[in-house]
Image: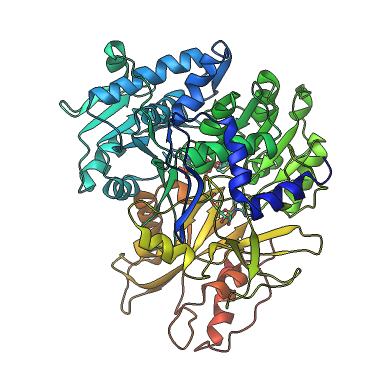
Length: 634
Ligand code: COA
Ligand code: AMP
């Protein structure tokens, strides 16, 4: 396979139509596309224009037609409810076509939006595929988000219907979703007409007459519906992700390009073939869940696993090894933080030793930087390749990876290896000049981006351009900083904007600041992501109180924690704020968040020449030291 990577990379760069046209042969089109790459409306590029398509057909029906009906499509393993179940491709087809019938009976049709707010149960995947089947556009919202965040998404996507469950189970806690859903609809200006609720025995919820429909009841009388052909470029889903403000970005994914690239990635990046068991230990609410719990494994004819549990505590740090061994998993994909959790509780791998992992081939990690310590611990334990790969909600699949199915390269700890064919990744300076290897700068990708990446933001071409394309004309700006080494390996060093990564969850410090600023005693604030040895980063707030506030400071700080929890959700992990006399700013009034982050992380920092009052940095260093920051974290 020597040279296979370079050959693929060069072809995808020089003749993307030839490269992706060839990849499209693995996917079924009702009507063949007219053009592989349509660049008639630059900088908006579209893939596989002019054809007709259905993603659900490619993920479900085709496998039944081709003889995989009896193969397990989805394994549901839920240590938190003590339930294990399996669905063959034939059973998946039955469930999905019937649930598509439920949605259709409620008047949902091609182009309508459906918001899915579900825990990690197979019904979440059925709902996604049912939407795809009838050409409705789904938008899955992560269950850890509070009603306010759900309401923001309802108002942007304007769904005709919602699909939810009575509750989710987080470790030992039962979290009632239905009251959160009701609250979100109350907060939102747009009112969805119907809500289909899957009642779970751990907590059933009363239904609102005329609006709510019981999933199980509706399925009893549902008429299965067939796949509805949509345009190849029609949206399959919208997935909201954190940007730099409180308004999340609605990343749009198209149908055909998405299927073609994901199918290619399974073979070439993950080294997976039809029939293999593939497990992404993530959540359907995140992009990893969309791409690698649901779509890519099913488009490939694999068996996918939906795991409703945690890496530790459900019941112990051997949970991942049990799943891998019990279901003969070939590839596991998860976030480094999950491995840090296992490492913390079982540093010597005593639980690991109890299981037979002979079918296991690769561990893939993404969602945040894979720190070398975690890399070494995991690879020493597993004695299998541990592959870091870098991607974003926007791209839908990885930008840089060690392509195991194409041509594996020696692994370098701290690097996701090389750009994946289709992505021309460059390191630029502030003016857009290409930087030499070894020099850190802004990471940008030359347009066009490959198939499956976002064609735009939901009903907001301007924001798409402004957020990603305007900074460097001809490029997509990733928001990450990084560099190439002299061997052409890329290193992604973290966000250069106000996005942070907490336990693999992408969050906006800007959104947190907007909430804190509404507290009546707060004059101004800044939230940064401070390094944390377990969760990667944790939000840390700096708050200046209004003059004359006499209220107990501890009470104010507790109120801030509650506000973030209520407005964004527990998943924000906002626990620590510091009351400071003032914030460090430039003379023009810009808050020096980058410098504050360096101080909190114990990194060396230079005092910016534009600072209005250098003394404040010493004070900030004193504050952060007082709460255990400011010391170099591993
Ligand atoms: N629904 C409701 N609440 C949720 C939730 C969900 N789906 N997911 C998380 N939460 C809550 C948790 O219960 C917790 O609440 P608490 O503060 O009341 O205890 C809070 O949000 C923080 O959750 P989390 O950061 O996940 O912490 P944790 O200690 O429960 O678990 C890890 C830590 C590392 C095990 C877990 O974060 C993990 O597995 N992360 C991997 C993330 C991932 O898969 N990312 C996708 C990229 S691959
Ligand atoms: P998300 O959109 O939630 O997938 O988050 C995307 C961001 O996570 C990226 O912009 C990076 O900052 C970070 N990220 C994801 N994977 C990696 C990785 N392998 N290495 C470094 N950072 C990563």
